Length: 97
Image (cartoon, rainbow, N blue to C red; front, side, top):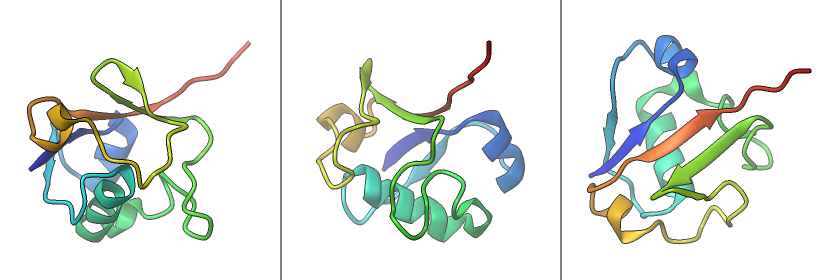
């Protein structure tokens, strides 16, 4: 199981609290997002563009204190994430001035 922490606004949209435990077909960001969107269809298009499969602006992925936002989405997640020891963090960035 892969643990995932989503930003509060996406948890409200999907109507759940806390951390997700996802069984992904592959231990990659793409695999995790596929599993999340299959379980919570209302989240399709909120984390990544459905046409290009690229992450949305202002959405970032962190794992084991590393920013994975610009990594290829088919790259393997760190073993701590794939094994469920650490969560994959999906963060909604804030911009302002």
